[in-house]
Image 1: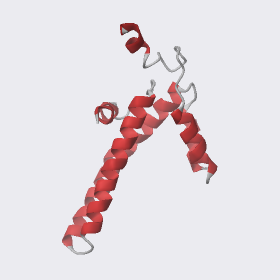
Image 2: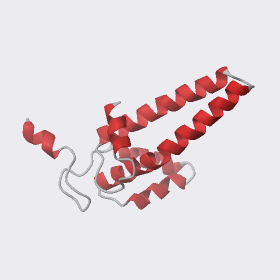
Image 3: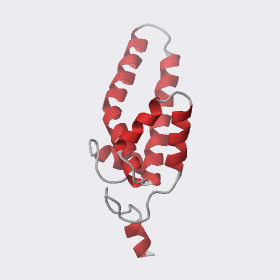
Image 4: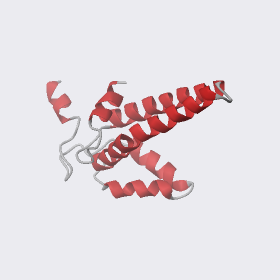
Length: 126
């Protein structure tokens, strides 16, 4: 949850780097929140409550689309690649699997063109 809040705090920051922990913390929390919204949506099959749930889903999507894109771009930066690699997700079938494979890997352990290693300050403290 802390990673989710941290990523939301960098709402439209497409520069810099996101560690695996920040990305996956954001992604998993976002998926859980979407699951809750979808579950609640199924509890109100019709009527006013259904319309409210549609509005909640649309608002949540609108509030999270930019931070989601930003954390994805920063994750690519951590791997030493441009955010344009996000277009790989649009390749049917294999694109999402390749992206998943990259995002499971550790980022550059050195300062790259996008900034310092997000873990570098944590390593020095040990």
